[in-house]
Length: 248
Image (cartoon, rainbow, N blue to C red; front, side, top):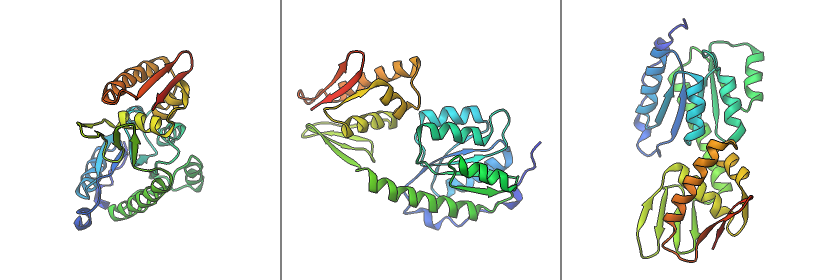
């Protein structure tokens, strides 16, 4: 059984969370006591936290939800933190990853960083150290995202605000989107009037190209067609045997 480290965790002043936009963190830790205390402190700071106690569940969550930062315990039963990171990096090369481990071997740290981790914190750790690391990497990630991607798009008669997950028809209704719907619509907005292969869409949005993911893609395409029907000039075309195109 892993040693509980909750004695090293102290509640960190939450006065700075008032102006912080809630970021979504994936936190993977199988030590029940440590996981509870750390998650509690993170939520006190205004973060939205998804906690997983095993690697398999964490990989499923990472594939189906969007996270701003991942905190991965290395030593987990069955699927370890290194394996989780490898899976995440297959479809998301940008999300910051912080490893937590009781092992302080130089080889383990190097291995973690080679997998694309941003930092490696050795247990026992202070919650203040973890919070400062999270803040640094979220700021860095936010700056990079703002440099690379706009947050709003004009699609025919629609204004699409990706950051707020909102699709607004000019002079008409507004609609809230799920994260996956917004991710897919943004991909179409970035590639208007261009044919995108099914495999490219699946690997970009779902992380892999297989039959079940393909069926899910078809469902989401149907939803977006329904959402965009307020502009008769907009059409998501099915290019038989190839993929899709957003015709504007």
